[in-house]
Length: 245
Image (cartoon, rainbow, N blue to C red; front, side, top):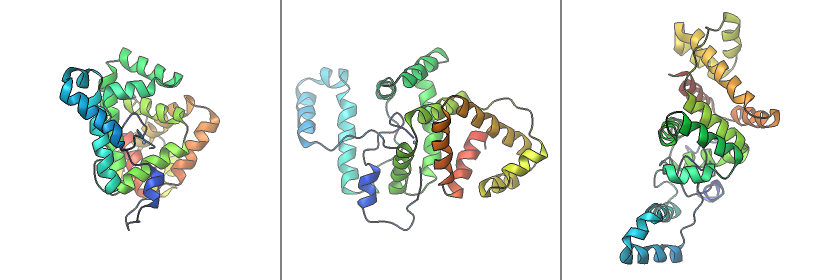
């Protein structure tokens, strides 16, 4: 749910001022690539497109132009467009490399099979979670609030964990399963998983531990506070995605 995942243009603040809908979610990503619908910039790009097509593609103006057109569409109708449209890999790389943690992530992904492949998998998995939150407007609010609620280090840690895949684990004991099932989302999942619950709970515990170990205690507290604010259905979707179904 970060700038590196989508090309959605509407910010959460803009959406909160728009007319509310009955299924507007109250939750999670992402203040994602914020690019206003600039008429003068659009005109400049259109001129380059007409007169120097090689420059148009070489400088990535085709992607910027597409984003400007999407911003126009979404500006007129917050329910239009595709909030989880994946950000191109080159743009995501530039965005991530603005921080030391992001640079490290890019390096690790390149070293382990290629940045573009890992990014694509993360975008797909996170997009599936975001779409569970409701209509387009709800999805944008969800992503914006996530990015406002947690530091960038948390977003990067989650991206890295999603890309890393499910770990091999020893099944959880009954006591650990019972603790997990004390919360509404945990109860739903344990009932749904049935005999698979010991393995699924252990996978979730292991993945949560890996995320926490890669961030500070304060950042971890922000993550748990954000998670506690989510609707049960959203938490179920997140946990199910991380546990592998």
